[in-house]
Image (cartoon, rainbow, N blue to C red; front, side, top):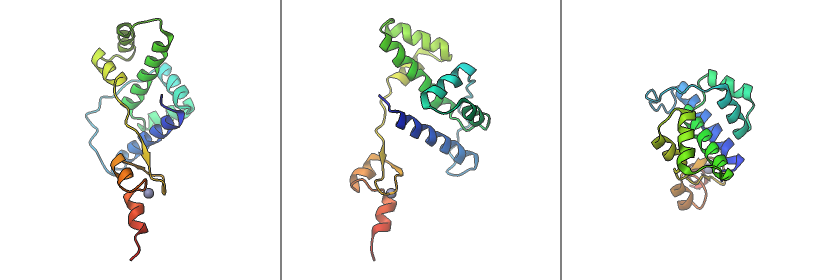
Length: 152
Ligand SMILES: [Zn+2]
């Protein structure tokens, strides 16, 4: 299960990525990403999942600061878990319903619900998110903090 804390962290990171893109920092070309049309229903659901008020989400969306794919995947995975827990429908039925709801193929739904989540690591000193390798190599500290700790 993904904790609320993780959801919020991910959401903030997505916003950060979008802001960077808009101001051309670290610019990854994202122009291939298709635009997803969110309905009011989706925004309401998203607001409930990540505990961010609807007005703020609407504002972020109008500024193109929401990563539509990530947001849609979050909706899909949340619905999937809810329906799975209800034990009323089988996997094929749930995937079919989600595919209709979000206007994507069954394969897309499968790749979202079966995707393994990457574990997240943070630097113990500055709390920046770092890759697992860096975390293990430096016993939980990021390279930047290691560099700053070197006395010459
Ligand atoms: Zn650090």
